[in-house]
Length: 488
Image (tube, rainbow, N blue to C red; front, top):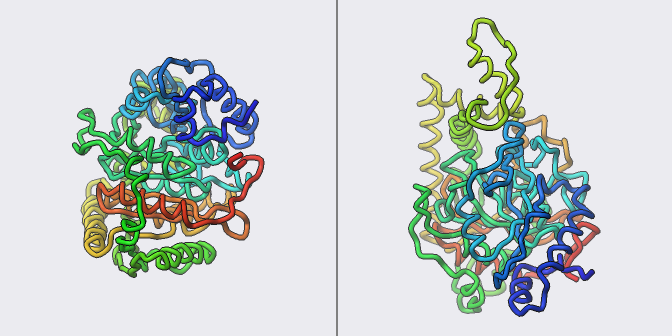
């Protein structure tokens, strides 16, 4: 059988429409690939091999879905024991949109439990491994989606990004990851972690494939009160119009706060190599300052757990999901309270419990003003920093992650070290901006390095165009192995 699994989404689209590619052969190729390598990688929690219907639709576009996005009749586990057997009774809006455009869902991907993590090590279903080095993490929380795309199990995948959960694993796995502006993509059917930060986005192996998915999911949805009523954009058409004059008209900002002490030297050098390349192409480069960046991690780890403690209160063993057996915790409590306590104790993992406790404490009487309210005020300062900078420049370029992929188990017992993995991605979520990561090279261990592009609100087209230009013109030798096969 031919290696159809190496085709890009755009190639699949063209070949299927011309009837030069059999839908059945494509599916067989993808599932053979998954059967061969996923036992080593653990990118998927569930597969829909038997359920996929081969319809007469002119499109037949395979996609994987992070397991916190609801698909009717399929399990939505959020990587947690507490939802291990939960079957969704409805489709998320993004699933409806994609289904109507001929996308078919290959399976649900592994993730940090309730999207809380930066390494996909907190999943109840075991950790996912980086395809470039099986001893290393793929990033998180959307690590399963990143790995599925990087290892040619699927051409594209959906993820969610609360503090970098698309961009950071995209960087660590050498793929493209895009987080749109907050409100651009409906969150209806996305299981909530932190409602003011969560955003559905996409993984792909190139910018054009990412744009194909994005133009189908970036639309207004009346079911989501935070959805922005904007006209649907044709990102793929705009990419094809990218010309030299447009690129040379851009002013790129380089925020000095993103090149701090402690960043891996090879990452810093590679990002500056791209910046120098763009300068030589005629783009104007300016150093800028985002002075409140240093507070972003602290602000995030007050606001996100606070929202999580509220959102996760619904998992009590009564409405749905895991329910503890009727045991006694304390005779001073009612049987119902005992059931609540045991269900949450047994159903949630340690990282989720840690964040619920952090959030509950921040929102508690006497601490609300000191922590949560203050964090929201500093969030506004971070937002204002970006608004001020985008009055001077069109886009920002930064590293996506301060390091390449670290070893499995290296930071799992040190939450503070783990939280710092998202230091360059968190500000984007706090400000609700669009951001993306694209691969730009490797370190001395042959591990991928990601470059982050940040744009003003609703300027996804401009961001995608710069990414497309870099992808086409900044050349670097691609590293392959049995999991990262490369185009054939």
